[in-house]
Image (tube, rainbow, N blue to C red):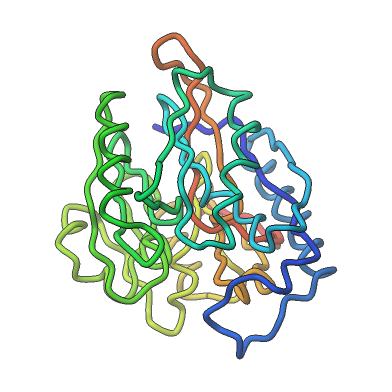
Length: 287
């Protein structure tokens, strides 16, 4: 069973109100509310038994609080990505120093142009990594990513995306063979071997949950998803992600996490998920 020990997050910048969005009808984020949600998100992560490294805000990068996208962390090393959105590409240079505190040079690799890859398109299932081909992640980026994985004795496979921004917008692994799926992922053959917990269309946003050391962090306000996760036997913490949803962010995008394991005699670090907004722990229970 995977065990996470460290998480990296970055404080939201005031410039987040100008971040990328596909849902302008939701309005701009309330910065003060976003800060409070970020504080509560950190508290929720700590409740899951991890140490949290908090990086300073980057005003020049409005979306930089979503630290999942510029780095993917595996149990054998870190991969600094090459984000597909021009306004976010420089974030990879800002996240690398934090990642290098856990890895030496031999265990930090890079996706390089013409390859592009966003961490939100990468879902870890044990030692296998599913990678979505999207507007942000291209075939060359996936080829490089899988080549790096193979060099570490891991493996990856491509998943064609049709509608969503990132792979983990609509599918997330909860460990124990359980997977939350919504929309186009309900019938994808790539995931037919898992116990698929189908999310109704009106709660599709909440498919972006994150599993942390046996607890699942679930966006607040989605009772069907919350009950489904609890019925699957998981402890849950509900979190408020309202201001991050306005920037297409869910419950996984804002963190990268490390695992207290050793690979090749070195500390191993693992990625935690795709969208990590600033959740608020309203309750925790086990079913």
